[in-house]
Length: 367
Ligand code: F0G
Image (cartoon, rainbow, N blue to C red; front, side, top):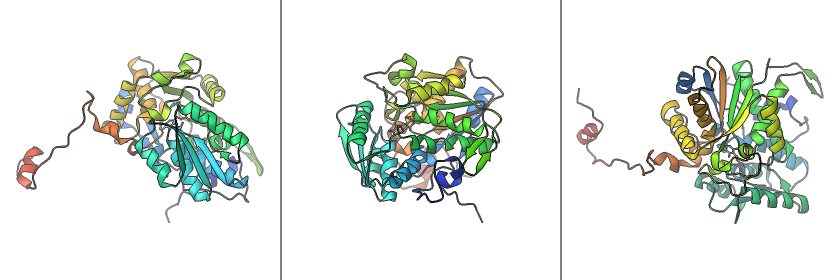
């Protein structure tokens, strides 16, 4: 019988803060494909893989953390959860709150989240408030609500989220047999780079559990390469940005909550956090869909944009193993696929209901 993936908490229970008594809230997240990226491998001379997180239940990596956060919320006896979001966290929180039977409120920056993500939060019955401000303002309010009102905060400032998200690193090592040499990913609020680094470190050393010590799984940890959108690149600037701006709305963040842990991930791993422009992000978005067969949302393409940029600068070593997390599905924000490189709209070709005309339009000659 085929193995049915049981969600990240059950698959990695011995490495997560849960017990046998824990009531697990899951939608079967994790177990996502690690796809060999043929063309990026040819380009760089390294073996490049994509960790395709758009294959999670709500279409982004957020589900890995949300299963833990919602499980913790239920354990704490919460009745309602709250989060701030650029879209994916709200979609995930809304779905997992529904599974948990909890009320969910989400705060999103007005006019700056994609239609797909907005529709998910609404479909799952969350109370969605569009705040006249950016993500950072939304997170300030959500934190204050969590402190002073009876709502449970499920943003990644909640350590349960990071615990769940670290399983992404476990899966990479479990697939490859060891850690990659370089791990690349987009950086927004900086929870994910912190979580992957935590996961890689834990897998590379003996791990203490309630039932004894688990041996190290990997022989090394990767170098972490993070990429931000140039208009929202506080780690590159070295200080928060008050007016972050980028078409990659998922990572339109100026004051990342996980600042210190992201800097630690960068520095302890001997890595870097750099910026890519919106044009570079859109070019990588096209590369993934047109050359690799993987459809992601623009923010998710920032890591690939970074790899292509570093390669052009002669800074990507050949003969290595490189993993790039592509964080969210292309259907979240599909409008970008319908634009040509010069910015005009793609016009579908219309044809009459006639095989000869269709064949001619396709350039086919009859056998
Ligand atoms: N990629 C996508 C698709 C995201 O939605 C996010 C963050 C990131 C990358 C960056 O990850 O914040 O851990 O550094 N989205 C959050 C949200 C902020 O509200 O959905 P990060």
